[in-house]
Amino acid sequence: MSDTDKQILGKWGEEQATHFLIKKNYNIIDRNYALAKKGEIDIVAWHTKNKNQKTLCFVEVKTRSNQDSSAERSVGKKKMSALFVVARDYCIKKNIDMDNTYIQFEQISIYKYKDKIDIRHYEIPVY
Image (cartoon, rainbow, N blue to C red; front, top):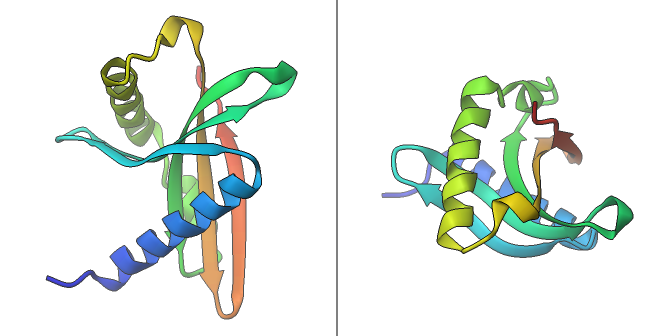
């Protein structure tokens, strides 16, 4: 079965996001980590943040073929809750000490319209 246009756009967006993060010195360690019936994390990476803190980053990628800011609005409480569950599972399976590891959730929104690409990178605050 072939991919739909939406799936093709999504895969393309994840590739763009990966290259974008690598250019910002992120060390990509995993992609498309899924937990059955709970969700998926698009990109997992290490990055040195403020004060030289090695931080484990869980990155959600949203790609759109328009410029209406819908990608930013697509990650709400329900999606974040699922990301937390999948991230916790990831840390347990990879033997990452969550109590002593800096963890950051991030989003990359990619807008591809006409001949332009707009990439927006956000840190998601965790309350």
